Length: 135
Image (tube, rainbow, N blue to C red; front, side, top):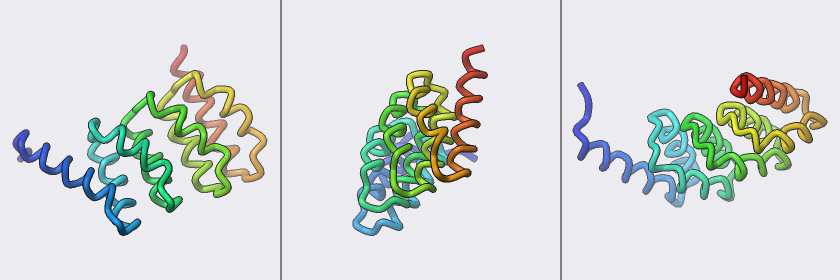
């Protein structure tokens, strides 16, 4: 049983509204849900959420953009490869792998020297995904 198009619009509007909520936990869950249900009109709001004050919201927005396949978000996501929090750097690398945007290769190659082994692993995965996409 699917939703009617009007329901889809209402749900999208509610999720986008939640992405601007005053509680960071609500914003975090909204970003997660937008990625899971692959709401394409959420691209701009999710890109804006990459600058959220809470890294947890940034992480979920990064993941959602990867899930959406929003290649236009690749450069803003790539900036997160240098964030102080390693979980966010790792998620940025994984999202870039999903986006398969060749313009991020230089940033990913720089991240191969990251201090965190999990980030380096995610970067290697992303580089391989991009290489596979160009075959």
